[in-house]
Image (cartoon, rainbow, N blue to C red):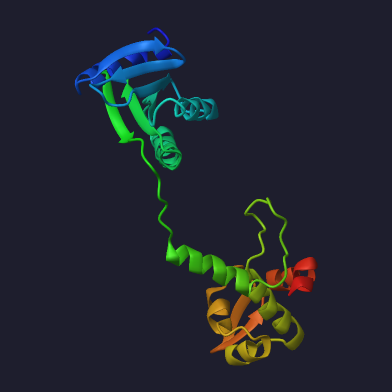
Length: 226
C-alpha cells in the first residue's frame, strides 16, 4: 500500500464541500483548499496528515482572510487518535477554527467543530476547589512546574500535622488529634490512611506507622512550611 500523502485528503474534502453547494479549488494563494458558495465569505481548509502546532499556526494565519477556516487531518484508528481529536477539537474551538477528519479508506469526512466565536464556560465547582486549596495550603512548599509526583497539597500538609502530633504524643483519640492539630477531619483522614502513615490501634484511637514516622523525619521544608 502506498504511503498516504496530504493530497489524498483533497478529493474527499472537495466532494464533501461540493455536496453542500460550494465551488471548490485547490492551492489558491497560500491556502490548500478554497470553497465559495454564492456571496458568502470564502471557506479555507488546510490539509495535514496529522495534528501539529504548525497546522494551528497555518490556520490562524488564514483567519486574516476569512473567519471560516478549517483544518482537515487523516483519521486514524485507536484510542490515542480519539484522544487527540478530543483535545485538538477543544483547542480549535478556543481559536475559532473548524476541525474535520478524513477516513482515507472510504473518504468519510466528519465535522468535529465549525469555526465561530468561543465563550468558555466556567465551572463554579472547579473555581471553588481551586480557591479552597489555595486558602488551606500553608506557605508555598512546591516549585512551579514540578511534576505531580511528590506535590505537597493542603491535604498532605494536614496529614503531616497529624503525623507530627502522633510522633510526639503517641497513639491518641481522633477527637484529641483534631483538637490539638486544628484539623477537623483528623479522624476521617487517619481512618482513610491515604499515605499509609496511620494505623488504628483501638476503637477511635490511632497511632503512627513506620512510614508515618519516616514522613515526619524527612518532612524537612514541608514541615517548616506547616
